[in-house]
Image (cartoon, rainbow, N blue to C red; front, side, top):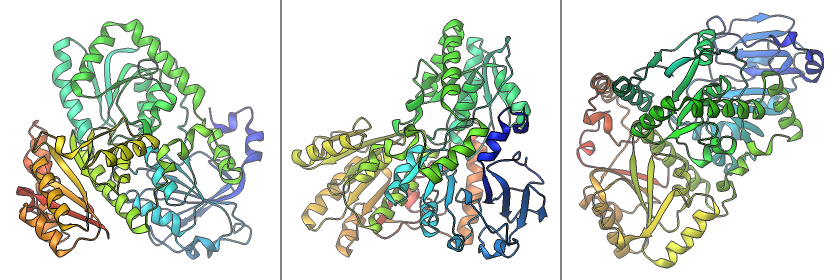
Length: 552
């Protein structure tokens, strides 16, 4: 049923904004155009992949590139079309349009932020753009756990974008077994690929059918979802993937990897009641076997999950009105607000430089989290507790925060409890840690006392593996660098030399080839940061990777 077939279409249409400007990165000759109306009575799209076209309902304007001055658009608008009610941008670091000088338009600016859970500079670049162009309202479409960064940066009207409810045909005889939809092999989705490889090997031994589908056209995708009894999902990098809601709307039993409490998943769904969560491939296999052999329980959870999704999330028609109410009246379902993440209430004062260092530290470790199945991190800082709180939402990162004194530990425990991450961070006294060479990543902060610095560097050196990554917060002196060098830590910079980049590309393909065989060669398991540090953030490597800077 199209929107125009809707019985309340006229009431809905009357409530829409008159003119909405929508910077767009899509090529509407290749991808499906969103049905009219999407968010306004008159919709003006602008972007570098569009072809100039004007209809009564919509206008399309081709721009010179992804980054363009808004004057390019204004020069092609008549006097009436310049009466824009809202600028509506969908933002994602490497792909979307970023028009500048939006202040020339005296109307509210609203953004839906897409993927911030992978790619390069996925959070910092968007924060910088949103602040520079004075966007006051934003919704995130994929990772609510990152809302606190935007909130702390001053974008206080920030929330999670409610998923769109999908309508499915009722299918009585659903396909038995387990369904997975997506690419079998992808360097962007290493965990998903490992999961598929694991299930293809293990499920036949238990006589459980495994139905694999590559990327499908939209209508075929809907059919597969509606006809599947059980669907397995692995988030790309611990985000609240929209696949979860799609599977629930379809009435399938949804198996999803365990996400952090900051992901908002558990704000709407209860594991074991609405869906099934898993923490390892072995745990996933065990739960699939159980529910395959207990179909009544599986069906009950699937029905409860479908009902819960339908009762909580927006239809296509209501999303446009949700955005209008949010932008013009600051009204939205309170469960979606950023302030539900207690980290938004952090009281510790820090400079803009330290905030930028925190974000860049998080972006780099998040990217390592995407590649590695699990990582262990040791932080030995007393002033800088926020980085550990930031990183707590990465579900496969095991964080230990160590302190020299009981008083410092007790104060930190109270802080971690106040921002809602105490269940995700283990705190301890430094000299009580007995396992040496067990951590992949370390975090230190600069100290004024040279003796204390020597002690901390030697301590973290013993705790980190021979191949490891060390981050240091603050401005390092030559003395502090020398102590790090004595312990084998080599300062690292992101090499952008064309030859090095070519070798990295070849190395990546080499790793990918072996990965398909279930073999993970060492270059792929690098701990090298993908994004260069910023002021007050220093990075060091130890082991083979410190001497082979060209490897992926």
